[in-house]
Image 1 (spheres, rainbow, N blue to C red):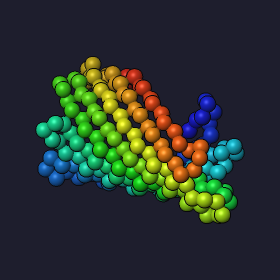
Image 2: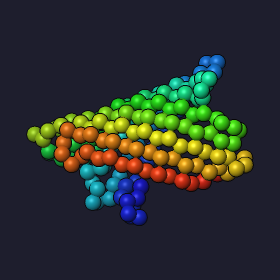
Image 3: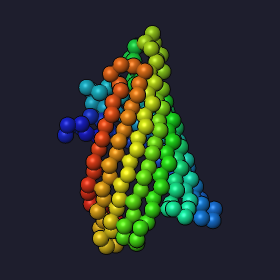
Image 4: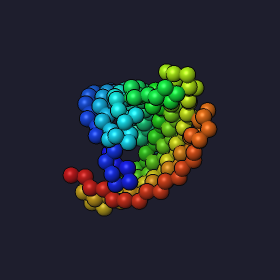
Length: 177
């Protein structure tokens, strides 16, 4: 991973995914283990991250509906008064509508709670994050598509300095082959 065009972390991943269809419904389960090795300025990020994710998707009269839950457990190099090992629970709902064979749009909302439990004498931190996104994709041909997305994030924390709001506008192209 990079920050300001400089490498700050090497990550080694193991991922296991299982998918199953039941009629028009699709279920998937995923486990991902990440071994994190940061450079010296970010030594506190060293450790492991485990993610357990389950997804349910089905077609509806108004489009494809997806529900997703994810549990993330981190074991990092915590400091005496500050945890860098959040446990996170997140839920997501996404609706995708195909206007034509070439044009589709989506709306998505995600809620995530992060618990940074302090192992020392410091206070525990809890963040509540709500994210809302809307976007569209236009397929130019079998290989290329154009994409646009607007995303708003609102993070509220019980510790000062960790509240933020962010808006991200993304325009790009994608190739599938």
